[in-house]
Image 1 (cartoon, one colour):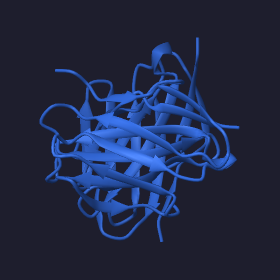
Image 2: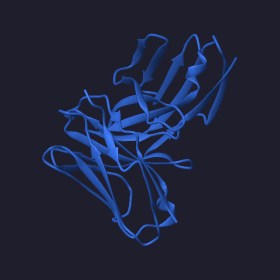
Image 3: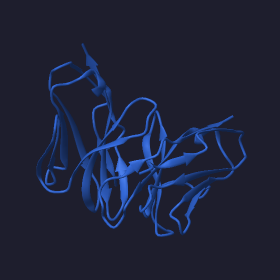
Image 4: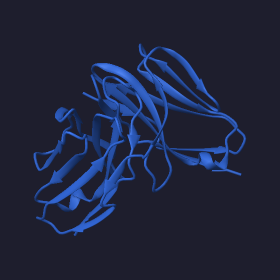
Amino acid sequence: KAGVTQTPRYLIKTRGQQVTLSCSPISGHRSVSWYQQTPGQGLQFLFEYFSETQRNKGNFPGRFSGRQFSNSRSEMNVSTLELGDSALYLCASSLGDGYNEQFFGPGTRLTVL
Amino acid sequence: GQNIDQPTEMTATEGAIVQINCTYQTSGFNGLFWYQQHAGEAPTFLSYNVLDGLEEKGRFSSFLSRSKGYSYLLLKELQMKDSASYLCAVREGDDKIIFGKGTRLHILP
């Protein structure tokens, strides 16, 4: 069974631009969560989608948004990029419905110059 | 508010035992996870506890005390490949998972 895939793996943008990251969950998984990981803050929860609906949201500004498609693939968008948005963005999929284990993708390394 | 505390770094010797502690203060507790993350890689699932007690899985065990807001991960017969960061995470509600900042474990030969 294929794992969680994320594209692109690396991205370089400049301040003020916007970016869209993509995550394809494991087949059959309906829940996709997004995290931002930085050396100083660790893994921080952005949001979680289940069956195309945002079910949970972390404490990030409105510049961070996401969506989920009917095939469970998810995208997250960051608008008006800031230097502090440079981070590893990880998505994780799970069956949802209370199942415990999350499977992480390899992440997208975003650098904002 | 949410608060998950774990030591920043620990060092242990190959073949020994190490215990990584995690304390938490969250609302709507619905389970605690431990993940392992090697440098440059994504986290991988180690264990999940929702009831008090010890869960053993090979060389790794995880303990939970909900009344104390406390968990630990116990690693036995340490191997060099166990050098990694260990992340404690708490689930609130359905699927919102809050991570601690992780404990970087160094294994010495």
